[in-house]
Amino acid sequence: MQDVTAETNVQDLFGPEFLVERPLLTAIRVGSKAVLLVDELDRADDEFEAFLLEILSEFAVTIPEVGTIAAEEPPAVIVTSNRTRELHDALKRRCLYHWIDHPTLDREIEIIRARAPEVPEALARDVAAAVNRIRAFDIAKRPGVAETIDWANAVAFLGVERLDEETAASTLGAVIKDHDDLELATARLAEVVGESEA
Image (cartoon, rainbow, N blue to C red):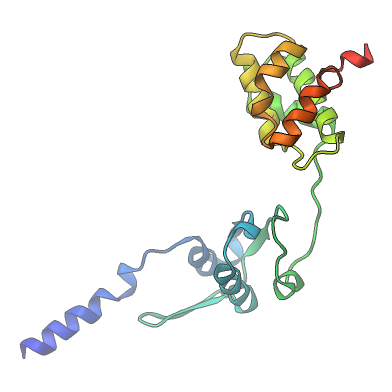
């Protein structure tokens, strides 16, 4: 009789109340009320991409001890990629494609002001304009908005009101993350800060 009780207790351990629900399962359970963001899928391994393909095909997950959990209505799913590797065609066929480019200068200034309100407006404008110029260079890794915000914060932390060559030279590592790109930008520092336009 004890064996039956022990077996029942072990089976009880695999019940739904002991299941740790992660975002994919939550999105399937909640269904159309959920928005599932899978950010930078290209950085995940092939096994996760295959698992996600299965999820996106059926919007269901089968857990041997619990059974199949399926969405009555599928959630909205947003998948982002930075193109560090090619995603499988089968996954791309299940997606609508939209390219999001870097923001305009004015929009990037607005983003800096919203995300780093302690950065003075003139400095935010200088930094955004400098990043815009850097992106026009023939570099390996064009800086994103996150790097622009980091650079603006770094320069503001130094108590600088406007971006000049000396400050740019000492803080470029906040915005440029590649050695060759850093050398190129350093060699063209006057262009970066816009002094060649004055």
